[in-house]
Every structure is written in C-alpha cells, then in structure tokens.
Length: 341
Image (cartoon, rainbow, N blue to C red; front, side, top):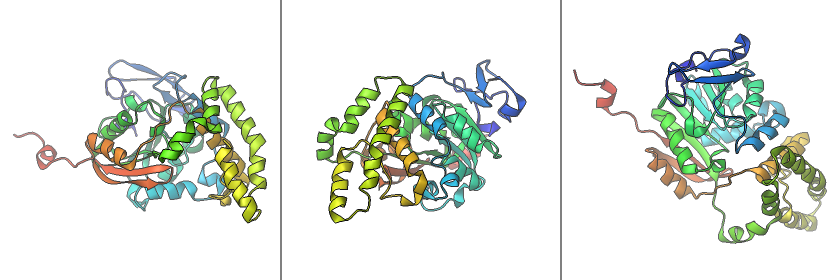
C-alpha cells in the first residue's frame, strides 16, 4: 500500500509504510517535511483523544468478538457481500480503502478475498485491527481522520465505510471525502442509520436508551464503558430468560425489548451461541456512547452521493438502515489520453 500513502496535509509521499513494527520506526516523514508518529507499528495522523475514543475502548476490550474467524459464523462476510452487490470476487487484486475499520471484522474478509487493504480508523481500534490482521500481505493500517485521509486522491478501486458515517460530525462531508479517494471507475460502498418513522422519532428522546446515552456522554469513556457492561450484566439475563418461552412470554419479550437499553441477538443471530453476551455488550455500549448519531433516508444518501460527484448504483433500506453503492465516473477519453501534444 506504499504507493497510496500520503501526508494528509500536503499529499506528498511518506518516507516508509513498510513493516513499521518490525523496523521499530517511531516516525514517518512526508517529502514536504511533515513528521508523524508511529506507535506499535501503526502510523498516527491524529491526536490520541477524539470523539471516537469510546469505540477504541470497546474494540480493544473485545478485539475478536465480531470476527467471523472467531465466532465461526459468516455474519460479517454476508453483510460485506450484500453491500458489495452479491459477490466478493471483484476484490481480488483490487486496492481497497477501508475507513472506520474497527477491530477488523471486514478487514479480514477483504484480505481473505485477495484485496490490498489500507485500513483507517479515528480511534485506538487500529491496535486491535493490527493485532488481528497485521500478518497479512498487502495490508496497512493507520489512525486517521476521514476528513484528512493519509492517502493519494482518486487512488482506490474500492472505498468501503460500513458502520461509521453516522458517527461522524457531518455525514455529507464524510461521503465527499470518501468519494474523493475512489479512482475513476472505482466503487464507494457505505451504509448509514435510517431515519425512523414519525412515532419512533417522537418517543425516542424519552426512551431509557436515549436517556442513558445522554448521561454516559457526560462521563469519561472508561467510566461509560464500565457502566455499559454493568447495565448489560444486570439486564441481559432477563432477555435470556424471556427467549423462546411460549406465545405469551414472547409478547412480554417484545414489550421488554422496547424499554430495555440492551441490544440482544437471540432472535436474529442465535448461531452466535456463547458469543451472544459479548455482542450485547459491544452494541449496547456503541449505542449508549456514540458522540454523533445521525439518521438519513435512502433518498438523502443517494442525494449526498450524487452531490459528491458519484453515479448511484443503489441506495435502499437494508442491514443497519441504508446500504448504498455508487461509482465514480470513469475518466473521459481526453482525460485518459493525457494532454494534447
């Protein structure tokens, strides 16, 4: 991935993006003179503290929880395949920028499909990602801001951002930054929380989940993480006891899930088995501590993609809300042939 790495300020090449951990380098430089720290083998282009700190804490506490290779399921693979349009085959040999990479649930699938992956995340989750995927060839991970990516513009065959755009200050600005990284003819693959119905929008501010979120956003991320784990520990046994107990109890369970702040996957992913509790902690903490939580309709996502100069292939309700694909228009014949002689 050396050819795609750049100073995020001046877009000049960096001195080294090889095996930084093995070489024990502590910094990398741009040809412009900018210097960036390298810690634990990972280039760092942002300060340690930021609005995504809570995500870094959860992924380093549960670095393997959502990896298919750990759970023995195909949950992450199936989601990525669907978002890509039904096949992973086009990834073979392709250059991929994955933004919001987290601990690597999709990174490992991308690498396994034969892609060269430049993974980025704003949070310290990059350390879990490196631990999970750092032995793969054609892989580089960096701690970076999506609005100031350390990559060459228009360099990637695929730009993938799943589970992250809704958590940034401006989804539209994020989509533009992602679009700018796709090469002519390249594909942008994203998802986003969907705007709920009017009734849910009306009652959501007074739900236990919304109230707890406002409380936990006012404390430090480590305290919020401990509180989230305690909440799940106290309430998840009730979810478990109400699961598959008969028609009447099922109705009680549906009502309970409306008021409980805890996410559970007993119905949707029973194949997780012993890992169900870990997933409950992760997603409950995620929902209670995200600094930004935007929602958009499929039409709004399509509009943002077009505003970013992309040709929309699909924008529809699916998965966590809206899943969308768009292509950067291929260069014109004049642009492809270079300047007139």
